[in-house]
Each structure stands twice: as structure tokens, then as C-alpha cells.
Length: 194
Figure 1 (tube, rainbow, N blue to C red):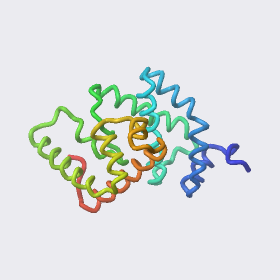
Figure 2 (spheres, rainbow, N blue to C red; figure 1 turned 45 degrees about the horizontal axis):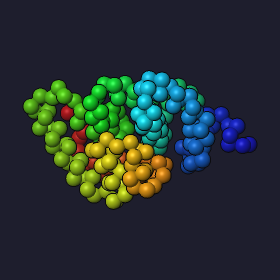
Figure 3 (cartoon, rainbow, N blue to C red; figure 1 turned 135 degrees about the vertical axis):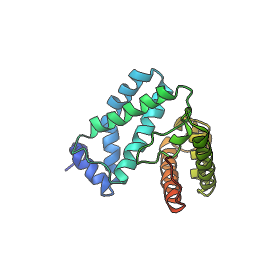
Figure 4 (cartoon, helix red, strand yellow; figure 1 turned 180 degrees about the vertical axis):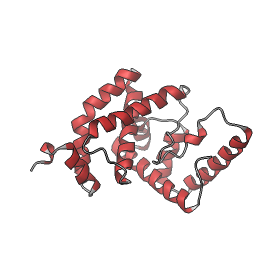
């Protein structure tokens, strides 16, 4: 049976079992609808591109962690992720790069809250410094993408242009950087919530 004709739920299962091609098919199948939805809300192509890329980083991470249990409702689930990222984008307004604090790789969410008490400020600074130290231990190519994305707030398009790699390669490096960072955080017992 052709991968193209498989049901979303089968493609998700195949991807989780290691078939990278299955994810490509899912992305191509739903790209237009998801991108159009994001663009209709943000009205900016570059921002929409970024949110689209971030949506699929979240999708990939959730699937890789085995936390997907939507029983074949891949598109609504992905749209919900995109919707949450759009809300985050508007909520931060000043474009402070943060990730929502879920079970995924949302390490910097603690850095975006302006209503922190003095005690929380100290905790936040400690976490920030701990995480920054760990970032230095990442392989050069992963560290570079992570720094550009999180600390310089660059789009994946800008990162790919500056590093002379494809957007997919930049995305891959970001994903591996986050996976490695997550492992290091667990190994160093850094608690990311206060």
C-alpha cells in the first residue's frame, strides 16, 4: 500500500515506529490547512512560517516521547498545538522567545513571566544560568541554532540563511539540541518549575 494513501493514524503509528517518511507525508498532507489557519490569525508570512515550524517541532517531540494519544485525530490535534502557539505569540507581544510550560521541551517558559516576585526572580536567574551553562556543552551546530532561535529570536528561515543549511536541517539541529538539553537537565536535576 502506498504511504500517500494511508490513514493519518497509520502514518502516526509508522512514524513512532521509526518511519521518518510517514511524518513527511503527514506534513505535506496538512501543510496548506495548518499554514493557512496560522496565517489567517497572524497576518504575517514570516511569523506564520515560524509558528508552523514550531508547531511541527512540538508535534515531533510529542510523538517521539510517546505522548500522543489522539486516536487518529492528527489534524485537530496539530491545529490545537498551532492555536496555542498563536496565543503565545500574541500574549508575549514583545516577542520574548518562550515556550509554553508543558511536558515537552519548554525550558525557557520560566524566563517570560513579568509578574515574578523577588524570590522567583532569583530562582529564574539560577535556572537561566544553569541552562545557559548546559547550552555551552551542546555540539557546536546545535548550540548555534539554539542560541539564534531562543536568545536572538531569529526565524528558522533566517537561521538557515545564516548557517547555509536547509530549514529542515536547522529544524533537526534545534530538535536534537532540545533533546540533548532535556537529557542534561534531567541528569543535572535542574527543576524547571517553581
